[in-house]
Amino acid sequence: MITAMHIRNFKSWADTGEMRLAPITGLFGANSSGKTSILQFLLLLKQTVDIKDRQRVLHLGDERSLINLGSFHNILHRHQLERSLDFELRWQPQGALLSGPLARPALRETKAAIPADEISFSATIRAIRAGELDVMQVERFTYRFRERVLGVAPGYRLVAEGYPNREVMEATSNLPAPDRFYGFPREVDTRYGKTGDFEDFSSEFERLFDRLYYLGPLREYPHRSYLWTGAVPGDVGARGEGAIPALIAARTRNGSMDSAVAPVVRPVEQCVAEWLKRLGLISDFTLQSVTPSAREYEVKVRQTGESAEVLITDVGFGVSQVLPVLVLCYYAPEGSILLLEQPEIHLHPAVQAGLADVFAEVVKERRIQIILESHSEHLLRRLQRRVAEEKLRPEQVALYFTTIGNGASRLERLQLDSFGNITNWPQDFFGDEMGELVAMSEAEMRRKQAGKAAQPA
Image (cartoon, rainbow, N blue to C red; front, side, top):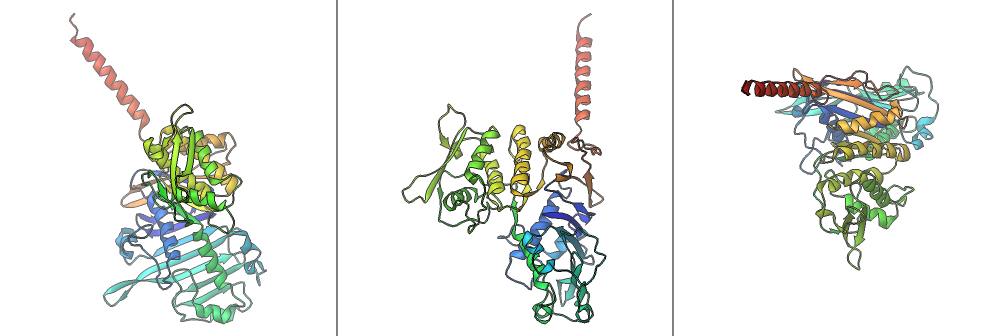
């Protein structure tokens, strides 16, 4: 789970300040206030980890990427190349790391002020002039875990604390460029591999983003039938296009440990069908083969117990829009991090509220972390209610409100008490509801007074 994040000079963000993240983290605010940019930053890191080119500092994207951010100039705050992109992430590593090489006692204690079960990674990236081009360069990066500090400082020299040969390591300078923005050069691991944690740190960073999945706001319209090739999708796709293939794969592989499907107590298909019914969208959900070879499938639903069974394409848009959200929540491996943009889009207010219950369940049962951007007051209110009912603890929910002014985004943490109350509710959070009611009442009074004046004496 990502526990904290701090970004400087990324798009509209001059400085986010430290963001504390929780199992359910919600970003709310007006359009173009910077919410999406926070998710895009994590996607930028993920697609950089995923590329094979280890010499590319950041993979800003192309038409095949999760996002296409253009050039380094485009992503810097105010497009000022003299600025550097600075960021820090903190996360809880997987259990294996805590019993592996990094768990051994360090030489001495350091002043690293982070929890004992978290890794911190920070980096600075800036543009340098190379002929007529501006090229991205990693200026520094640092890992911190328990009593250990290991990194690369300006001048490409090693920084190390908590290691027996610290002085020798820190005398190493003029290193080759790092791998991407987070990996130590291979020469360092060759020289100090037995006493350093170089590969352990960079591998843990990659594992973090290997378990991060994204679903965007524009979902693909359902098909009348689906041809399954036998491939097991890694996720449901950014537009939800892989939701049905994922369900088929989950059924055929039974969620086995050696597949991309996480083992769960209930089959993925059953979880999805139950939630579609609990959300009041349909009565029955069936995924069935229509050919003897079990390669072509149809999705059929029944809206009520008495209605006819029809294809998913022949019912309202809401079912197909929420389906990828539900599939991802139960198809992603346990301990995954899900980035969701407007999961409530095209959904009835009651269903929007119900999504909060879906998220609460997968957080508890599957250790999923949800980081979402939303405009839904109904979803937010349900989260507040579940805190008041003690079905969620306040520390399991982190809510933020974004605004923009003078060209820079601002982030405010909403204070959620143990009764579900937001004690610092922003002005016009979801529009000026009271102002609308007052204006409507005034208009009613004016019309009634005008009507009386028009009546003959």
